[in-house]
Image (cartoon, rainbow, N blue to C red):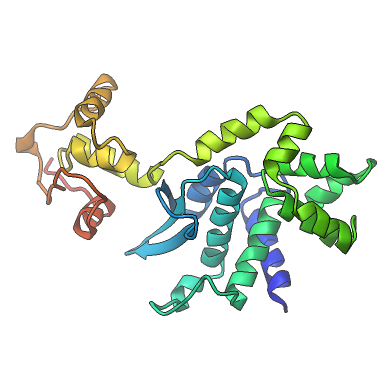
Length: 279
């Protein structure tokens, strides 16, 4: 079976497993985190490195770069999810070069495309209407994919020919948004995709550990990108009734140190491990 077919079947199986039908996955990060028990973080990165997936103990973390191109960021997340779905990480080594067009990469690309825009959704949108650039724009807007992905799926559904597909893949999302009146939405999506965010489950564990007195407010600040405002983070937690427990009731683990930069491996182990206390 080809990588294209494997990717399509994998995306269909993922949607069926989680009862997603052919609906748009608007909040893709939340879907992945809740359905796959996988953490996603949006962080600073280069234009060349869009995303990667790592495993730390029993935790899988997808890291994706901030971007002013929200559709590309979404396809990157879906692509990395494809690697997880097909368990590509199990056979990966330090020498694995994911940037090359390996069979795994082709399969993950197909998985991402069919996950974000199933052919059933394409056919539903195209039913009883003209197949033109307005339809292309509607697919891009509704399912939040690039024009290239929408054009390829229209071709795969047999609704446009190869020449039209090539022409439409050259169209940009800003151009479609401006022409068809949804540029305010696109600007909102750009702000969201260009904002750093920590893995939600890890941040939740860190806040619980803070309430147990195991980690400091500085650790929370480093996780949520507020390194320069530790006092503000402490006050925000206090305003919501989240205060560290009294020290004498706590079995203290290693406390992550305040400072700039990301969390160390030891600090991650502490947050990902089980917080214990004496009752």
